[in-house]
Amino acid sequence: GAGVSQSPSNKVTEKGKDVELRCDPISGHTALYWYRQSLGQGLEFLIYFQGNSAPDKSGLPSDRFSAERTGGSVSTLTIQRTQQEDSAVYLCASSLGTDNSPLHFGNGTRLTVT
Amino acid sequence: DQQVKQNSPSLSVQEGRISILNCDYTNSMFDYFLWYKKYPAEGPTFLISISSIKDKNEDGRFTVFLNKSAKHLSLHIVPSQPGDSAVYFCAASRGGSYIPTFGRGTSLIVHP
Image 1: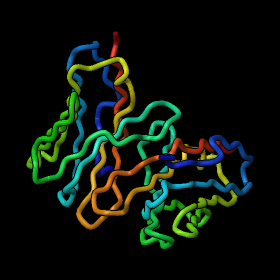
Image 2: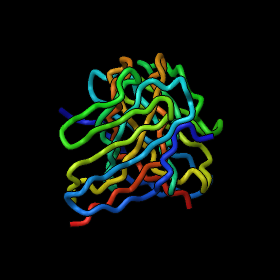
Image 3: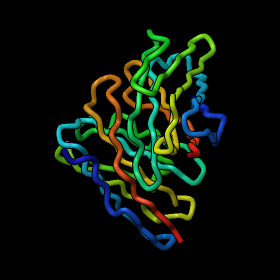
Image 4: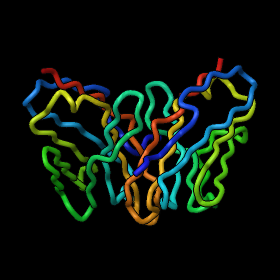
């Protein structure tokens, strides 16, 4: 079946602009995650959804970052007033939401803030 | 404060030999460990996992060993193949949390 789909695959934006990143999880997966990978760094957790609610948003780096999930499916990560340090690959993953079920990742959105 | 550490950023191995990738963790509450493999421009894909009640799990050419007392796990790939060249991420989670913590990854290059 179809995997996790993210769009756009690449986004170049000017500092100060807002961006929206989209994630379509695998159908039937109740859990959805956003991570990011900055150059030379590991996968940094941002936010986790179970259904439409976000029980853990502790990884969001600032109040410029927000995310929502609707219909238990599509999620959007929004970054307002982008800064150069926001440049990274933003990865979305979904899982069955049961204990220890592995994450299935999309191919990511590469965000470059100029 | 890195709770999952992969201290070797890169590893180079000859085709047919064994690749050993290491991972250390600091949080004693972690009880489930996973390895993911990532090719360039793709997302990580799940490779193999191990529960803390075991010390070894094997799947084909891939074996993960867990040493709880040392808070250390390793991934063995035997025999290594050029297609195994990728970045390998170690991840750990604790019971009741659905959010794995990832290491920084080790880039494996398998030479023909």
